[in-house]
Length: 227
Ligand code: DC
Image 1 (cartoon, helix red, strand yellow):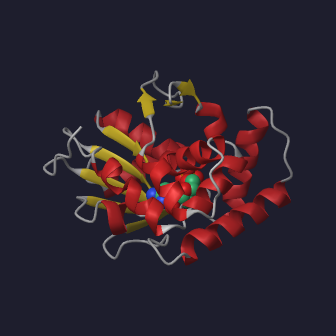
Image 2 (image 1 turned 120 degrees about the horizontal axis):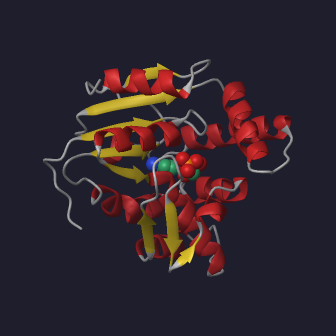
């Protein structure tokens, strides 16, 4: 796959739980554009490293794992999460666990890992367009994006959303522990020296606290000029 720089990009960044995953999937579907879930690449790197017994402090070995990721994203019917295969193995569920998110946040701190994933992410820029979901889509990976959006929500609201999601999928969790985890992850994502989580200068900020998915989607469509 080769990057097509003429293809428009809508870059959607923001902290965990701001609703980026759901919104970008719906947006890509509505526009008929490609979707990049960049967080999945960091999660896959952490998962592959764990399976291969690679130490999470060994930046060079982790970068090698990231560069060699054997991954396929399989399209699914509307509304269903994308199927992700790692070396042919369906890891869709494992990828979404708190543990995998935590490990991803750790490997994402390393500049070597970020560099190793850069071109793989840019290759998703294909006609007719790309919706890119992440932390540094507008600031690093697609600085020329035609539209940059930064989605936020209060940490309490994000913890509530994640809590309901986990309960729905039959996982019993403690809401206070979730809130603590979300705050710790925000802290790490915002304060790392390489590609910290922050809005691009030219990003439009949308606070999703108290809004329904449909309300957020309408705001994002309007902000991207696609409404
Ligand atoms: O969006 P997510 O929860 O799947 O992301 C998992 C972790 O990966 C998150 O803690 C930060 C990191 N990440 C990143 O550093 N840069 C991105 N573009 C996407 C995710």
